[in-house]
Length: 89
Image 1: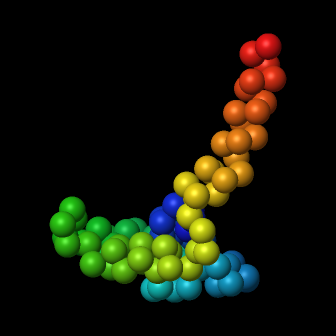
Image 2 (image 1 turned 180 degrees about the horizontal axis):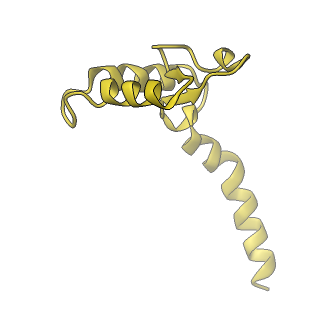
Image 3 (image 1 turned 60 degrees about the vertical axis):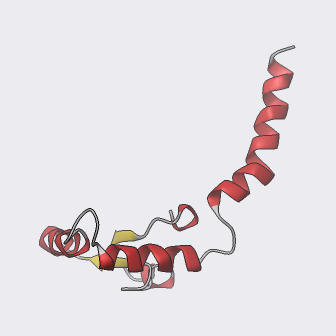
């Protein structure tokens, strides 16, 4: 998800903080009420003034060395193109 520029709201567990940096690229929750509170905070001012959501999105984009679309063009697309030409013989 980070490679697509998506921040996350993830269930908190022992090692998730290795990926999700709280208030930098995502938020963690332990209960449905915490998730609801997080979502209300993130979408406050929707659609134009979701500052918290924008901050998390920028953090998600900054943490990846390459974007999903770049990886797709370089690695997946050539393999799929090659495989599809094999089956269309």
